Amino acid sequence: MGYCTIYGDMAGGLAVISDLPKTMVYRIAEWLNSTASKPVIPPSIIKKPPSAELRPGQTDQDSLPPYPLLDEILKRYIDEHQSRADLLRAGLDEVTVDRVISLVKNAEFKRVQAALGLKVIDKSFGEGWRMPVACRIGQEKAGHG
Image (cartoon, rainbow, N blue to C red; front, side):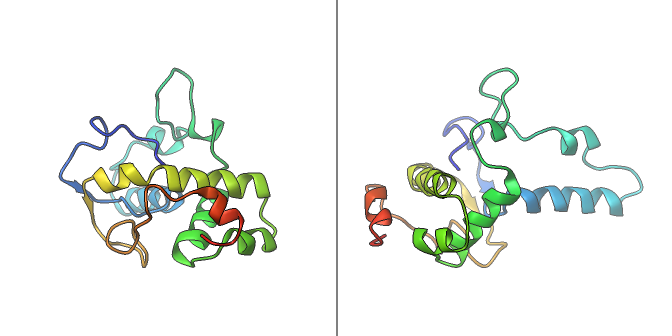
């Protein structure tokens, strides 16, 4: 979604969970803890609301839809290649859909500069995804994107 800093938390050589939706990352963390004799990931980390931590008290949900909804939109839009019109026909909120599509498109320049990521799911943001940085959201609304 673009909630990262290019020379901060994106600095690195390999982005291991780069293509995993946030809800899957949390499920994996909980599974990992359930298989170990003691928690590998402190439960307070798992329970803490996700945050880019750009300002005190900020959480991702201040500007993003709840992660289950966000992940559903992303799965349909990216993995299943559903258009804006498809998402709206599925009953998803127009304002939310437009915001998520806009964020995905606006974060493309960061994905291009990010460290290589492991391909874990069917459609990753690596070789399986490229969008022109200059793509306009107006084309998507008109059904041309």
